[in-house]
Amino acid sequence: MENQNINLINMKIQEILAEAFQVSPEIITPGLEFGDIPEWDSLGHMEVMMQLEDEFGIEISADTIAELISIPKIAEYIENQRK
Amino acid sequence: MNTTLDRKTTVLEIKPVMSIPEYLTGQVQSKLAYVDEAIVEAQVSSERIMIFLDSQEEIFPERKAKLEEKVQRIVNSMAKGSIKPKIQVLEDHLDRPIPYSKDPTPELIDLNELSKESDGVYTLGPLLTRIIDFFEKQFIDLADSFEAAPYRFPTLIPAKQLEKVNYFKAFPHSLSFVTHLHEDLDLIDEFSQRAFCDENGLVEPDGSFDQVENLLSPAVCYHLYFALADKPLPDGKLAATAVGKCFRYEAINLASIERLWDFTMREVIFVGPKDYVLENREIARQRMEKVFEKIGFAYRVESANDPFFIGEFRKQAAFQSAFQLKYEIRASLPFKNSTLAVGSYNYHQDFFGRHMNITLPDGSPSHTGCVAFGLERIAFAFIAQYGFDKSNWPKEVREVIK
Image 1 (cartoon, rainbow over the protein chains, first blue to last red):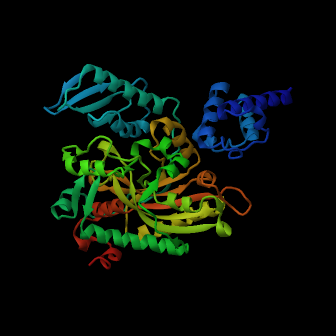
Image 2: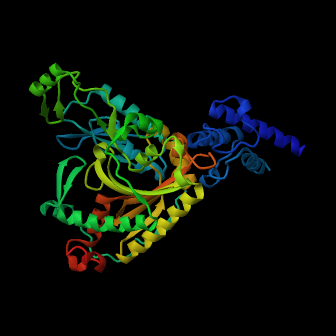
Image 3: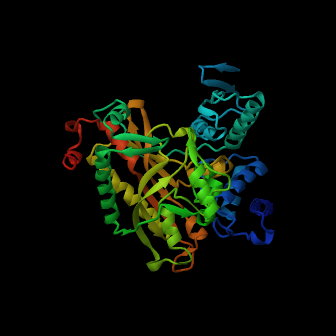
């Protein structure tokens, strides 16, 4: 059940990134990190942070923004917020 | 509510569409300078905005409505969903004892040390120039400690290059354009006979100017990145230094020598892998801490963000804050119980490496950073802290400036 949840969160995050960066979903690989694609730059990163806040109903602090620099790290953070 | 303060100024009071967080009031206030040319001053608090309008020209209700709409647009754009910046203080030496507390500006003007040519454009006299030379020596010593290669950069900067580094989107409000007359004998003749200046500036025949190819450079380090573009970085890392003129238009914020349109910066620039850039930025800060300690300079180093325009402000400022990309050296100005940014320690991640295609030996984009000092501002801050009586000056400065 827990694995299923993590998979769902991962898929949602990949969707959010594709939408925020306005790129095809295939480009958003599960291990993608900040800077791996030109669209994940400073503006792209902040767009993702705001969409994560809206989608998951959370508030991301300035401290956390600098830590969420890969899909696995974002997924782990979201999962912890929902516990 | 509209009230007339005096014959020349009308006040427009606006309740912002949303409460402005305390940490944003200064940033919103500085952006209001760009709302309308009739604005001569603005004051911003969380729940109230006061706009002072030059009422020499009549301000019709339609214009006021439009003006209010623009003010609300700025508030909405900057405050909605804003993220409180993480303020990190790396050094705090604001409590150092300093002997002077008056505003030095009137005396600087009386002594002909400060001659205003136009808003934000000043000639500095021998005393301020010698103080600048003293600080320049410290900054060049800092550059030498990194064996930084010396460069000389142009004052003009091509529009095409600024576009590549996203400058038009991030800082459109501060651009300074350069142009020239069309290469057309008839137009040049017409200009020479009909051009004149009124109280606002040059009045020229329509169609005199050519398309803008160059602007006045807003920063020093950009020129190095342009010079390194589209090739692998030799040796995989580089330290460089240059002094150069910089130009940032700031409208009514150009009220004193504290904020100049035309100013000078000395930079030490690092290009290479991430660790190389970050380590050297930190080493530079520690070396400057010792220099400032020797002369008893009162200042603080704290995290900051660049003055992005409203479209990008919210995201870019939050990003800079979150990743601790910029630290400002904020010198004490005792006469106003405030501080003035006189320098900064900056890290750009691989932004310029990617946009200018500067690559490391492994093919990845280079990281960049710079340490920048505003020469006019640091001289002003020094005189604001130490005054004009040289017997009160630190020995290190007195020995150089007799």
